[in-house]
Amino acid sequence: MTNPTEAVIAATGILSAAAVTAAEVAALDEAGLLRLQAAVSAHRRAIDTFAGLAAGEIAHRSRRDLGYAGLAQSNGFRSAEDFIQSVSGTTKAEAGKLVHVGSMMLAAAAPTDDDPPAWSAPLAAALSRGGASLDAIESILRGLGEPDAAVTPPQLQAAAERLLADLDNLDADQLYRRARALRNELDEQGIARREKQRRDMRYLRVARRPDGLVAGSFLLDQEDGALFLSAIDTALSPRRGGPRFVDAAAKARAAALLADPRTNDQLAVDTLMTMVRLAIDADSGTIFGSRRPAVRVIVTEDSIRQRGSGALEGMPDPVAFGTVERYLCDTGTLGILFDDEGKGINVGRERRLFTDHQRTGQSVRDGGCIYLNCLRPPGECEAHHINQWHRDTGRTDLADGVLLCRFHHMLLHNNGWEIRRTGAQYWLVPPRAVDPQQQPILLVSKTPAVKQLVDRGLDRTQELVDA
Image (tube, rainbow, N blue to C red; front, top):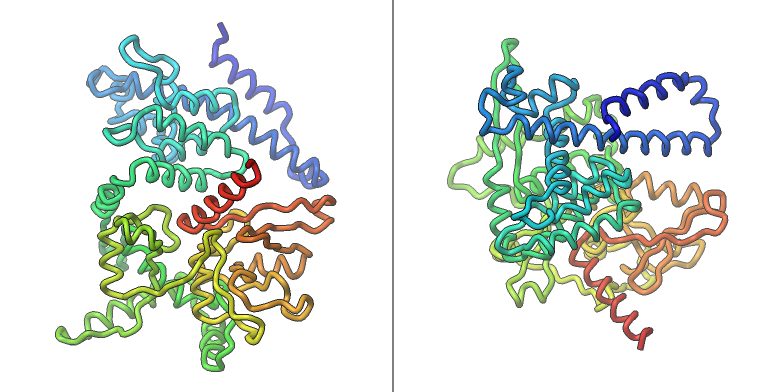
């Protein structure tokens, strides 16, 4: 039997002997640099497996029923996480991640006679064979949660296997969001309960420091967080690559903000304090603030009819129908027509610029910058004509415009990338310098409801082809 301690020590010695300098790395060509990064990632995944197993065993030997005889406790620490943090010099969050994943691996590797194999066995196997990083597995575990009365272990195992099949295409953050979406699909009735749980987690802590400055931290639920982010994004939009302004007054305000000597962090805190002062100074009997920051609740007609869930734009988890109803009562609705494939309304070529209604439709349809893996929200995006206005006699139709953040918008125009549309699908086409075959890459909406519309349309198309 291999001694894991000796195996890690031997591997460390080999890596130490192969130490390279910064100059040697700088001398690598692009292919060599990518090979180095891939090799380092593979080694990190292997080390993650050892680290997780060790942390899981430390947690097992420090379990509460052992009391002061536990491994961590006997070494003067309250918990396995505190012990691992001290030994490894890592953060408390990283130590907790190691314990979480390591405990899962041990449970999956050694089921008891009374219990069936753990639903997370495929995740443990993927980590053990080096096919997944610890961050990826931990994201899936957090996103899927634990079995309960509504979601069975076999259902969670099937969801885990679906996520593992997408490991090469999704990073850890994307895996977490996809896992949350799968959990919500399995237990739609639990959406309201989970929404309340997240709201119960909110807090605001402030304290005066010895130097007189006031410091603090906060945690907001999705609804309040969306409102707060919208307010800050509105204030900082020109600096964050928001829409290009046509109105002269808007241009002047944007120019003034860009020339402002304050940093973004200073502008953000000044925006917050301005809102606080406005609230304090307002007459208690006066309704003020006729224009609120834009927080959109996205809900389909089917969901309204069936009292299903909705979603706050830019937020990963759905909200219960009670939240949807409250927003509908307070703000009314804005109808945005999508056909069964997910395509939107048109206005023709008479207008050069997309209308506000179309921009809203694009925001809902794309959920932000539609570029691969980009998480910029709609407020930081520009409308891009798929068929360029001058070059291709492009039309200002909702379906022929997509949202791109400033960086990716400039990338398309300056580096030869293009976006093409087939029906409701959008494809990113790289320049020949990047991919000589120019293989199109599917772009996916960040809005779950629209993505489901497109997926259903594709499923129906495939059924017709199969028939």
